[in-house]
Image (cartoon, rainbow, N blue to C red):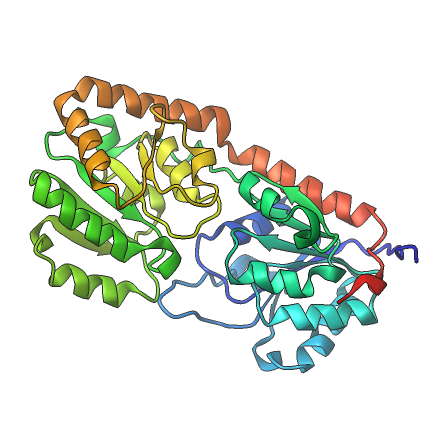
Length: 372
């Protein structure tokens, strides 16, 4: 069966909720700025522990749709109405677990509709795609690791499209501690979601062990999320409590990065975390866990090091060496920024997303017969 054609060119992005400053929302804003007919639908107005983006710009244009009343099977009818009324040719599944069955049913009704999933790591959504991905035209991933994981049967026959993420290297620039002479008391930072996969409690455990060996170290944590209360309680009860500061929500990542010397990314599960690229663009080297796409981002000795968070001995040796050689550490800062300029420019990322959307819209839809 040959895939059906569809002249509709509108794009519908289906989210569970809209987190402030999140990459997927930024991509949709950029596509809208580039003239694409983008509508966003979301199921939940809030999510515990996170600051929401009200998307006032989309609201003003009537491009934000609330599907909270359609979490059940009525969601398929609601989505079909949007597709019909707005001339949608491409639907994007962006981390919305409720949407997998609904989009599958919608594809059965509208075989000419193209579907694209976006998978950042091999967590729960990866498994949802493995069950429902038979009707998708493609799946967008950030890292080479995800490309490898989706090779063969895991892709369910969908095209695997790698789009390497990037950051705004014009806005993310060295500031604060990164432009001052290195201080004797290095400040290690955690900047990210307070969620299990990001391992904030692992950062606290690492801080405790490092502080016992190197009492001149200081630590600060920026972020919000469901685990924020647990993290605060752990710090309060910690023997290193006086050296660990929980700063919570930052108005912008640049504020957090200006306050630290080294970013630690102790993730248990991750894709291609923006925090690594943002830190490098701000002249902050990174110590990152060997998981997901993190090793693809770090060039040993140029913008950081790949070290498991439990390898306290190696991390302590690195930190002690930087304290003993402030000139070498200052050179590492400069090198980190150079890596960001060469590899992490957000403009290339946005061009790649746009190309993926245009190419998918230009192709016939994948036959509905392949649906699971």
